[in-house]
Length: 316
Image (cartoon, rainbow, N blue to C red; front, side, top):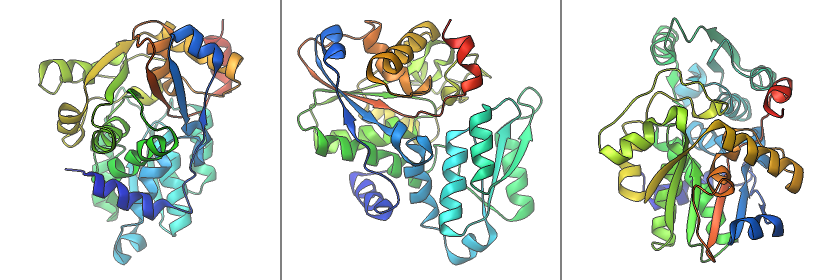
């Protein structure tokens, strides 16, 4: 299991490579929510998402033989870009399995970072099976998007940063797909500020993590239709699920309309370019799904890789 010591070690490894992203506030948000809200802006991280933290931490621990052979992962976008860039920085060849309907901005960036992209039809194949087969065939080390100790520890550095930048938070809200960010940040938060509530936010159309949390049994979802492409994961992982059970206080869901409304508000009022998945945590506050009057609330904006071609369909 990942501990606060693993997260602190990850923080040392990624220093000088990952950015210490800023925290932004808004009077308009505070008035709307009746609380003091602090946005941890991982949309300003390298590759435009928190994923770079975990990717660099995981790859930096490769053995010389692993570095020479290369790495493989599967991802719809942000983890793909993160592994591609981390691989380039560390001299590790990267092969990325991506769905053929992945957002164009993420697909182009992954290739631009120097990775080999293997496309697949998500309606005919599973990325896990294809990735495992390719990794075995080519002798590559598989680093999955979230269910990996190095990934989880690296993502936990987001909360490590935030609690240093903004002391005495009462609540931390984090988006959840496969649970790497949420579990890592929950471990860090409960070690640094045990009284701070940690709540995961998920799309209502992809509510497997919420159902898993509520029932205590791992639940799945198949190719969910949601604007939050970063949360279209089939389930929590063998590592992330028990960490979330142990360290997270609650899970809630928000629908696509609430995500889009929150995303639009952040663009218009705070001038923050945020992708749908990145707006999920704030959507729970903006929509009134969660209310914490008078509290100090940390909100993780997980990414800003917006597919500009899709904007007309979102902002109607």
